[in-house]
Length: 83
Image (cartoon, rainbow, N blue to C red; front, side, top):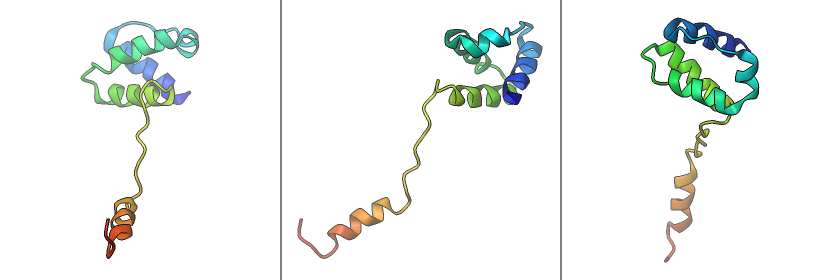
């Protein structure tokens, strides 16, 4: 909720448009449109908040971190053996 409120204030300052928070919360296409426009902003804070909201709403994929030892396990499996 706090992120959405910050987004609304910064978006309004940046673009001069008012955001309908109820519609923003309920209408995925409306939110996607506003967040896409905000992601083109030069305002770093607005950009970061827009990206966070996109991630929370599932509009961008979360990156899965691969465990650091994954390559080591594969390499150890073949050490000393013929393939």
